[in-house]
Image (cartoon, rainbow, N blue to C red; front, side, top):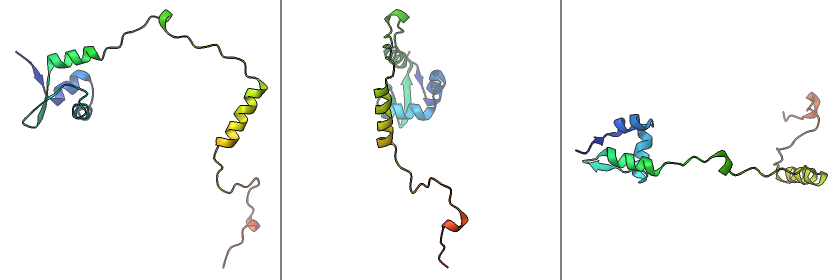
Amino acid sequence: MKTYWDIRQLANYLNVKPATLYAWAAQGKIPSHKLNGLLRFREDEIDQWLESCRVESRSPDSMPRKPQQRPVSNVDALIERAKRAVYTPKRGNQHSEPIQKGDVEWDS
């Protein structure tokens, strides 16, 4: 006999929120059945779906290694400063000195 779960039961089984399951079902990411407007999930289909989501672990030897970083030269530092100067947005009307009480004229 096939076992069917409702949203609450599957949410508990997968440890996800029911809203997540509704979204996944609407997007077709998880196998589901709609029975008179109610979502139901077959246990065997969910187990197969979970197996298809499996990520194989890799041994440390097979993992990609980070390339060795080359030392930063003066050219690299110069390029970084130039990029920052070009790509950093300027903020409004900046003053290099704080505004003093008499610096601003007010309309009366």
